[in-house]
View (cartoon, rainbow, N blue to C red):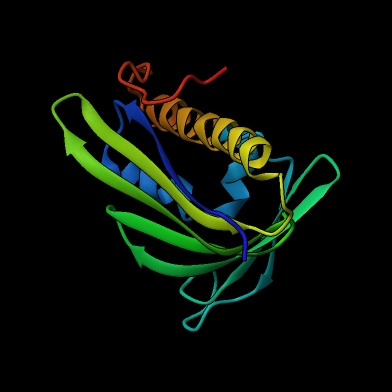
Length: 161
C-alpha cells in the first residue's frame, strides 16, 4: 500500500463562483487557462455531456490522464477521480468555490495514494505545483473573461514556484 497524500492549494478571483464554475466544468476551456495542452470527452455522463460519470481525457506534453467526474454542484463544487495517467490510486480532487468580498476563493484539494515506493515526495511536489498553476490560471482567466481584473492569490499555503 502506498503512502496517502492530502494537500490543497488556493487562488482568489474577482470573478463570480458561477463564472469560475462554467470554466471548470467545461473541459474544452482547460487548455486556455491551465498547463493542459488538449481535452477530449471520452464518455458522456449519465445525463449527457460533462455530467456525473463523464470521463474526460487531458493531455499535457506526453502525459495523458483520464478523469471521471464524481460530483458537480453548479457555482459551488466539482469533484473528479483520476482513472489513469499517473502512478497514483484512490484519487479524489475537489474544487470548491466560496464567495468572498473580493470575488471567489478557489480551494483545490487532492487526496491520493502513490503506487511507486520512494516517489511520494517528488510526485507530491510536482502535482502540487501543477494544481497551483491550474488554480491560478482558472482564477485569472475567469476574471479576464468576466471583465474583472485578475487578483493574485496572496495567502497561498504553498509557493507556486
